[in-house]
Image (cartoon, rainbow, N blue to C red; front, side, top):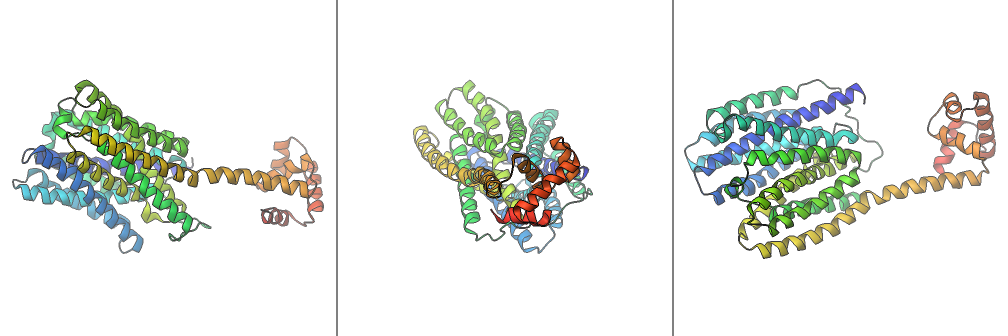
Length: 451
């Protein structure tokens, strides 16, 4: 990896780590504050339903502003981070329930805007390292949050301590975006950037549907109230399994996008097991941990699916739509789960039906994204073979042509084929004569024109 790309990768991971740590600690502090002022059900509805919807709205606001180029992305991020640090104070030490709720909602809006920026910046990292950057950044955040909670257990999230930590992290977030990195801002030439393009539109609709359904299914079957979970395992510790899942998913997805997608789909089996063993304390805790690990793959998939699309088609404002759609699905799934509390059979039936629809849509998107690529590879071989047969090329001439088309010089071709440079020139002359071309560039143009 080039030094420039290493710096961008490290900067992306650092921004994700600091930003998510700030918003995670703030969200937990707000949640703990609400738990002291209202019922557990109300607290969960405010944080994981209304709060997630507002995060999605914040991502949408950032996308709209970025698309219209009304405000520089970095300036909007800095403003959101400052706002988050300010709103954190009344959200965690306020004495009025209404005030705590309002400022918590403002935290959620800022959280979405912050996420919009770091997901946009993620597209600057190379595609083959993008999932690792996100997975490691998010994974290290969950580990750091757990380590901080070990200092004074839940007391860390009450009062002045969490405010000081929040302000310190906000300052680090602002400093991180000013790290110098030579970023390539060129557009991807030759790509269809019109969102009304039929193929792209179909891909985006399928992507939105799949991410929404994945999040919906996961939360319907995998939603516990906060006190219920804490009876078996502390909230921060349980998320360590999420960290492991995120990091594993990052490496697996960068190695193969197809494998990462398949693992994300397979992860949806866990909620059904959790529902089946509901009430068994040990089993619930064990599968909660397993579910968090599996959810790491879903989290990485929903981010990378849209991040890759945004970069490939030069529609960078779409970079955060995976999390935006996922948050709406998270909120809807949690709301349905709370509404059906005690009706486990009905939850299983609904989850199973939605899972079936998810699988159908998933394989349609899978074919759209991956199968055509395999066909293009086969088509390339067919084009080469047809061209070689048409011009009666010998086996050696075919080898020379293939290497020439890869922009190798005569010297490089001779080294690869273990023949002299003069022999390469001899075969090149034969190639030009058989194809009726006068130069390499004309031969290359003739070949590409035969596709």
